[in-house]
Every structure is written in C-alpha cells, then in structure tokens.
Length: 584
Figure 1 (spheres, rainbow, N blue to C red):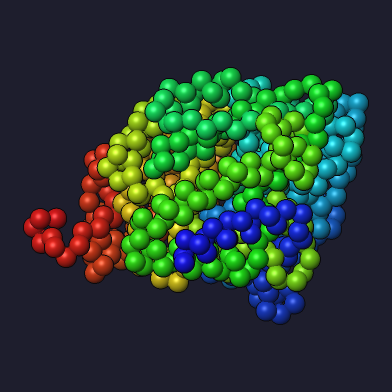
Figure 2 (cartoon, rainbow, N blue to C red; figure 1 turned 180 degrees about the vertical axis):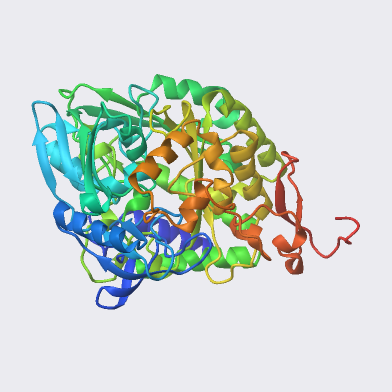
C-alpha cells in the first residue's frame, strides 16, 4: 500500500504542470504589526533549531529609505540584517542576533531600474526575484547566461551566497561573475550622516568582496549585470552505467557548456544532461519546468512525509530503495520536466531559448488557497538536510572512488538520497571574488531526511551520510556552499580561502561596529569560537563531529566510530543490542 501511495504521489507532482499554487509564507512573522518578530529560512528550521528573534522588520521602498534605516541602526549601534522574500539560505545568515536586532526586508526593493540594450546590461534593485530578472531581460532580447536552477531567490540573496548554475566555460556558472557594478548601503561616520552609499564598478577591487558578501558588509540596493543576446539551448538526457564516472566527470564538464550529472549510486546509474548552446535560428520553443519545483497538493506532500517517517522508524531500507527506483523511473518517463513546446514532450533534443531552459519554480505562481504548495514549503514540516560542497577538479576522481567504496559496503544507504534525485554534480569556475570558488571544481549537492520534532533521533544510515560529508569537506578540502549545509561544513572553512584577509579588511572598513555581523557570521569568518555546538546528540544534526558516544545516541544504539573508508572521519554508527560494549 505504501509503495502504491508513493507512486501516486510521484504522478501527482508530475502532472501538476501549469496549476497555480500558494506561495510560501514570508520568513518574517511578527506578533504585533511589524514588531516582536521571528525570522527563519524557507525550510522553517535553522540547522541548530534555534528561534531567531528581532525587535522589528522594516520595508524600505527606495534607496533613500534604506539609507535612513541603516543610519538609524548605525547611530544606535543596533544589530541589523537584510532578509529576502523567501529566505532560501539554510544557515543563519539572516539572523541579526539578539532580540533587539532589526530586519530589513528587501521585498519592496523589487524594481528593474534600467535595461541598456546597446551595452547589454540590466540594473535591478536587490529584491528583484530571479524569475523577474530573467523575464525582463528576455523582453529585450537579452539573457543572463548562467543562473541557479531555482528562480525563487532574489538577486541580492543569490549574489551574497555565491549561487550558481553549471559550467566551466567562459566566466563560469556563478551569477556574481556577471556583475559589473553594485550599490551598497553601509554604516558611516557621524560626519557622513551614519550611512552612505558606496558605488562600485569593475575597476574597484572592493567589488570582489561585495559580490559575495554573506550579508555582513551592508545592504545591496542595486546591481548591474552583463547580459548576452538571447540564445537557444539543446538538452538531451543520457543515462549511463556509473562504472566510468570518476573518469568521465571532468571530461563531460569540459565538453558541454551547461552540462550537469545526477548520480544514483545504489542503482549504479549516472544521468548526464547534455546541454549546449545552439543558434537562435534553430527551431524549438522548449521549456524546462523542473518537476521537483512544481506545485503539489498539501495532502499529497503530507503523505510523502508520512511514508518516509514510517520507513525511518521501522528501518525499512528496502522500502526506500523500491520507492527510489519508482521515483527515478517515473521522472525519466516524464523527461524530468522538459517539454518541446511548453506542454508536451515529443523527444530529445529539447531546443528552447535560454530564458525558458535555465531556471524554474512554477510552484511559486500563486493563488492563496493553501491547496497546492511548493514541495519544500515549511508549513507542512517537510524537513530535509541539504549538504553541498565543491571539490577541485584534480581531486574529483578520488572522491568518486571513495564514495563508490561506501556504496559497495552499504548500497541501500544511498536510496534515501535517490528519493531526492540522488547526488547532483554541477561545474563551477575559480572566481576573483574573495569568498568565491578558489579552483575550477565540481559542486556536489545532495538532500536527505531530517527528523521533524525529535532532534535526538538518528537517521537510517546516519554514519554513511556523515562519512560522505566529512570525506568531501575534510579529506578533499571541499568548499561549503554558503547557502546550504549543516554547521560542521563551516568548521575552519574560512582558512580555505586565500583572500579571506582581504575580505575581512573590507568588512572592517565598511562596518567597523559590526552591526551587520552576528555571532554566527563571526564564527563562520573565524572571528569567534567554532561553529561547533557540543552537547548530547550534537552529531546527529551536524552541529559537531562526534568525539564521544554522547554526541550520538547511545540509548538508541548509535555510537561514535571511525568511518568505514575514511578512517579519520568520526560518525554515529548503529550497532544493535547483540553487540557488547567491548565488541564495539
């Protein structure tokens, strides 16, 4: 019955194409007007499960109003943070720290300022959602060549966290590589009125700090991006055995401008997206409406969660594997959301203009009826972990080989990842941004189950997921994606950035009082104690790397042990009651 239910769920998601849904709640909720507020992320839960409070939220509509707000905070030395429409950053970058802090919402800074067709540039306010930027550029025959795949993020937010698509070509896939100028409102001296606008162009070295800022330098008011004439892309999905993945992964990225790969380790399959630029004259008006970003019935989403909750509680690994194969098979049949004309898939390649192929998120198209929502809507408590890190191209084959060793030891462990599309591998280039990528790399991204209400409850195959995470981040020196990850990903991460001191120098210049900083950002930037939170069960949610059994769940037979492949790893491993303490 549960398997049948899961199959129906998949079909519900796929065939909701074009149906309107309720958008997610604003991440800022206040108990009295715009005061006594809390802020969270799109998932409804920060990694440490803390509640972030603020005294008020303000909604500037112009740059001048933004200057006034920052000046007031600067004068009173009040903590302040910018927060975006959907707050898709997993870590606590939007939390000002302390209940007296102020939130500045960029919801109303959402206008297109100028489109210069001749110079192929677009200037937008920082609260403009990616979907609207893509649409406005297309109206003028222009396109931003590379963007993240989800269009429900703001320009300010995606730049602050280094969000990207997939490419090793040209300037690469990170959106911040196409920034040509920015305006940012920062604190200032009393003589300057306590706040000022800093206008930066490509000739200003400080732009390399501001274009990936983690929100600690001020509030970006405007951004100008370099566009290209509209072009078309041709996409074909090719499924192969993963036996040569370690060798093929680097070559594939160099051969295809927009290519990426989904890896399904337990099924020993790799799904290659052959994705290349073609002439604008080539026929085709294809559309990529990615299935996991489509609306879903609230009851259906609840049933999905109930199924996986039961599988976790009963340790039903086989059930997860059966459903995972149903998911990947059904998505394949539905061409992963590709259609040749916007409504029907008739075969590969699917050819369409870049604005219809690069990003999606139709679940955000809204009717406030509550019947249909985005799959990750926090109101239904669909909790998930998101782990993402970038590994230098030269180290990628070795990482793949290590993960394959884990697959051979525990193949069923990976079915939980495959329920959420497996491991996504995208390509990113080295960046001039101080907190951007330091090498040409592959970004590994995977999503997996998180307990909703019982933080001290371990997950099925807890140790395998923890070991993959530690192999990528520590054995191979992976850089954490700033907008994803659990706390442990940021342990001494700042030491991996050779230009970190330059970034901190700009930070001290722009905000010497640190009103845009918080305990969390100071920890991430190495200015305070570690991001680690040591307490009973801390390793279960990535708040620490276990060093003793109490960091796991010994009462539930989960103990701190070395990794199976990476012996330096420390993971929470399950041993049933048949084992004595000495045998462990």
